[in-house]
Amino acid sequence: MSAPPLCVVVGYGPGVGAAVAQRFAAGGFEVVGLARDPSRHAALAGPGISLRGADAADPQALAAALPAETAVLVYNAYRASFTMPGPSALVPAELQADFAVNVAGALIAAQAVLPGMRAAGRGSILFTGGGLALDPIEWLPAASLAIGKAGLRSLAMTLHAELAPAGIHAGTVTIAGTVAPGTPFAPERVASAFWDLHADPPGAFRSELIFRGS
Image (cartoon, rainbow, N blue to C red):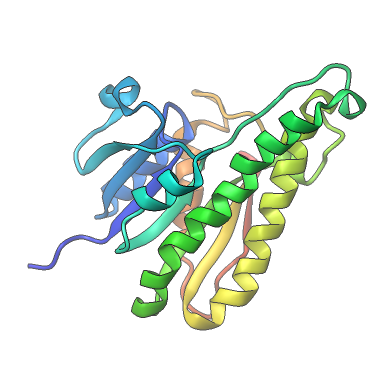
């Protein structure tokens, strides 16, 4: 009997990370969740899910933690500096540190798993996007996060254009709302959107699924 396909969730924790891991485990995947401190989230790991340590802000550690046989990569890590009253008060060093996780980390993770996906001729690289990429003035104190999510969206779309002809699906689930249990943006509902995007058949890959809670 062959081993189940492997899904890796970078940025595992309460909310979207754990819910996505559970959804893919229910779909027959072996799931590895990567977190800076996996011991904090041990209670969230269910059947088919194991946790490992990796910091998305550390390029070498992140790349080394990603198995070559990854079939689905979900990049859910982010860093956010909230500055009052708005973007004119952003500290450049903080913006750079946020961007290193929000966009550069996503690129590093994708580059780490791509050789295996190219060899297999298939795979999914999915990113957790945000509504601030669509409307960056919705919350001005989150300007750094908005810049990061816009960059992540651009990365997803350009990767999609490059990789789709090779049978590799790159895309973003852009969450246009605040994730919270018991709401239309409940983590398990968002996780279903990730599964739906992953399940797109070859030739009909979408670069983006905008989740609006319905």
